[in-house]
Image 1 (cartoon, rainbow, N blue to C red):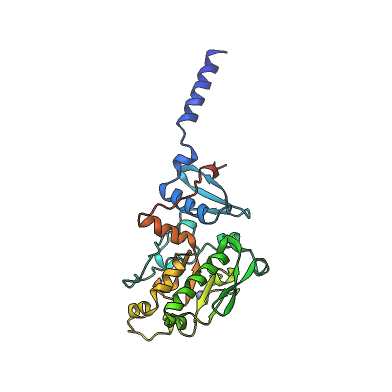
Image 2: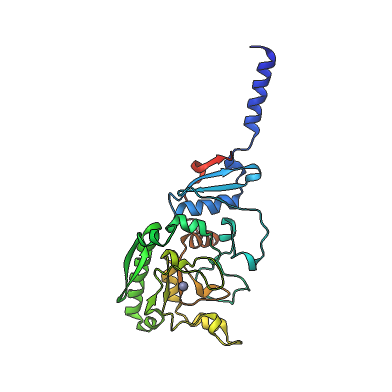
Amino acid sequence: MPRSVRLSLFLFFCLLWAAPSPAQSLSPEARRDLSVLATVYPGVLRAIEVGPGGRATVVLADGARLPYDDGRARTPETSEDDPDLKTMLAQPYPLGPVTAEPPLWFSPGRQRVQAFFFALYGHDQAAVRSSLKPVRFFNQSIPFNTRQGAADAFSRVAARLETLAAADPGIRKFLLPASGGMVWRVIAGTDRLSAHSFAAAVDVSPRGNPYWRNLPRGKNMLAVRRAFPQTVVAAFEAEGFIWGGKWAEFDLMHFEYRPELILLARLARGETPPLASVDGLLRPAR
Ligand SMILES: [Zn+2]
């Protein structure tokens, strides 16, 4: 082999060795967030393509390709309009009893990447309807999506609540009747689908639990939040649901299956739950 060819080969392998692998260039935050998604929604992430600077594109099981971080600057006010995956997971959901009024625009979970929800639960009303099963909730039957383990998680919540209500019947009035298991609808004033469209959210006692817009100005909002039984909130959170009562624009009746936010919250408080590795999903961007 001529010397120049040997030298070229040597340089080529040096470059190959020195170039960062996709695993090395993914930021720690992206690695954590994508591991969390891979853990709670197994099989939904098919590949993670990593480009220059660690820019990641997530390829979903339905073929959708979503940027983890699209690089767009967002203010808290606009983060709900068209978030990327990073924005969807950025506001830390506060686990446990409510202790303080959240800052303005702090509503973890209200940022939803709609294309991600299509991949999780179905692309249209017919697809979502084909995945429903009725879940017994006290004396009611609420349709819930079987995909992603949502219906089973809701069923476990119902069992926890029945145990709680047996000891404390006073909580029933905060829960019953419940509704909104499957309602294909856009959020008022937006063109975004509500979590109820995917049959992965429930409204407990919509008549009894006030929505922030319907409260008089000057009302002590923190007291209203805290009047809701925190044992009920804990029962939902234990099974991967977030509570709308923790949002700045609170929605006391609303519980939504968002196990990724609960898992991130557990990590943030130092717990070490098992996480799926994303190493096997990483590919260099084409
Ligand atoms: Zn709701």
